[in-house]
Length: 438
Image (cartoon, rainbow, N blue to C red; front, side, top):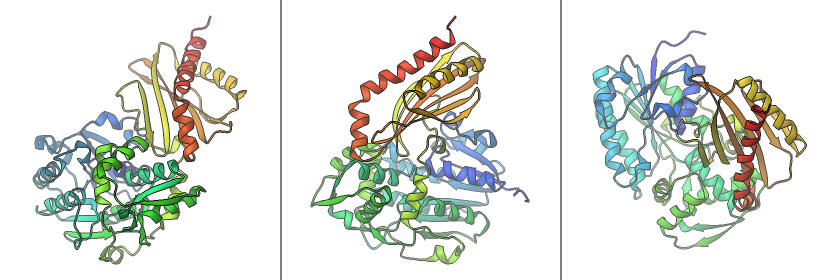
């Protein structure tokens, strides 16, 4: 295979789309540079050693020049929605800063992923900012390929995780009127197909609407997710639910922060479907996947070793979060001992836990051990230990993963959470005692 000589820059490298795109670029032999405001957050990714990671901030134009040096094509995957009020102005300014810096560096092509909205309907501030960002990028001299997508169906997608956790939680799902609006969900792999196809096949600036093969309502999206998971779900209509109230509930139940949920809910208040099939005509080789198939594909990632370790970012030693279908409890400690000695202590504890209905899922000597619970619980439970060396010190991370199944899974995790914390601490204490046992 001939390795492409193009240097590809991926901005927004800590985000969801970038985390899926970078490995596929590497698989195709491209040289990749990743731009992030906090590069440390990328160090735990499995592909971090294969790329050039640089610091840069779109609001600090001087920081962009080193990242853009010798770049042929740049993926613009930056989003400021998490900043709350005023983010729309920041997005446009960021795009303008990037274009100026890219022109000075001689970049040949920009590929941008935005949002899909119907120009004949009122557009929410969130989707309007996505469209205006694309317009700002296109005002420069560099050709821009802009893709506009609706719901992205894939493990880790904000919209998909909102659907996943909400549908898992509610046996009877309350829906506002806008859930009858139509959408055109697109599989994350199809997003990758289009983004990668645009690297080799483009001719000047263009806007391409992309969506899956089906037009379905938001309610039907949730019904189909439930069907794949084997849940029976019914719905009852709530004529009016305040946006702030929905955002609050989504922020509590799902991995989506309240600020982002507020913007997303507003964006769902109208249809989000493809009205121009120019993307399919330009890239007919893309084999579109329906929503149920995309959901089944996402379920294959419901395993601790198949999700991004976003929690292992060097910030903090104890974390509790929701991520890619899991409730996660993560703890990290420093132990003054060689990895081999610590791993022997971990295997001793694992042998004891096997009597408590845990089984070894994966093991890598002196580095990783993953156990899976065989107990009957309303979800799937794993316990993982990982060893790493840094500055002549050994760090042990212990991560508990629980994928809830239905409302019972949520109740199991939250009602027993104090006991989970105590047992998770006890596991680490037992390992340390075994390490230093005479």
